[in-house]
Length: 139
Image (tube, rainbow, N blue to C red; front, side, top):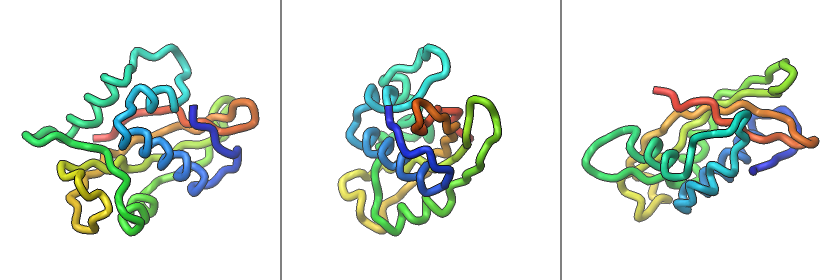
């Protein structure tokens, strides 16, 4: 499970989010499921997560998660939404775009065709550290 410092900030959540994206880019969808906190036992498997993410936009060409160049990461980071929550079990919420492309050969190319799959997460504190709890993929 990805753990990160229990400090309320958009930057803190984004650092954890990009760690998760790197797991997806490595095609380790089982690891990506394990990297998230699940409030209840989940029926999600790596295969289900991969199918949900890589077929979301449809089309004839397969979609791949990539870590793009720093400029495009900045665009994704700037679009991220973040809010603190004052509940007993959740400390925050954020939504960021999973970068997907049908042309994964050079993910650092500034002209790469990217689509963003908006994904939201709750932030929970467990044992003095924060973890990400997947909420939903947004249409």
